[in-house]
Image 1 (cartoon, rainbow, N blue to C red):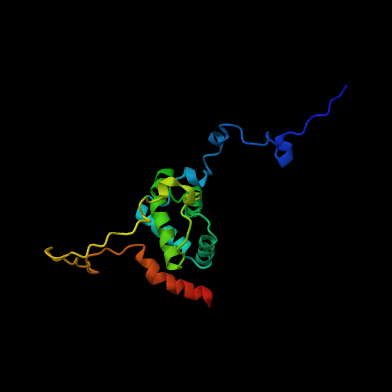
Image 2: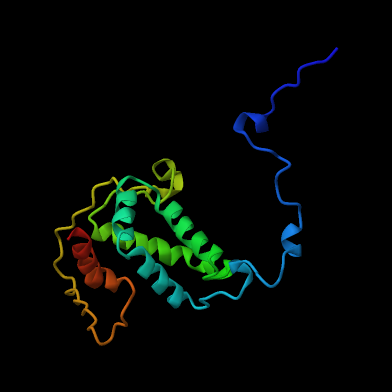
Amino acid sequence: MAEKIKENQFDKVGVNPFNAPIPGESLTSSSDVPKSWERPPVYTKQDDCMEAIYMEVTSDGTLEELVTLIDNKTPLDQIAQVILYRGYTQGLWNPDLMLLLIEPTLYLLIAIADYADIKDYVLYEGEEDDPDAKIYGDDEEPIIMDDDEGQAPKKELEKPTEDVIAPSLLSKIKTELPEKLAKENE
């Protein structure tokens, strides 16, 4: 007799497994209209990419949403992944440059979090449980040595002057961010 066909995992989620691209189908698409990631990238230098990321992240409306995401404990690495993958799919940079942008993008997000006075941001999911992230001996009391007699005085280090230091992208956070936040709050 006729047996009832069991419902499979694809039927449960409403997905047709046969409605997918054929392997190699992208190689047969028209070369007249290539995908954005199949063309030469817009940016080829890391500094130019970081400038574009900074401008996008601090644009009107985006900055406030970004600060809200960070404040809601969204891991910074996930935010960086979204930013960088979106830039890749838009053809702004190639995959190799995207990998080089991971670290500076995370530092940019950390600087924005610090500027917004968010000190307990989450760098990556599971960070608090990661034994490699713990600093052993950090909970110990420092040894105070009162006997400084007979030692040479410590030489004070001079702070570098402004003309020696090259302007940094992170310095823009202190100068431009207050103005942008003031515009959004008006």
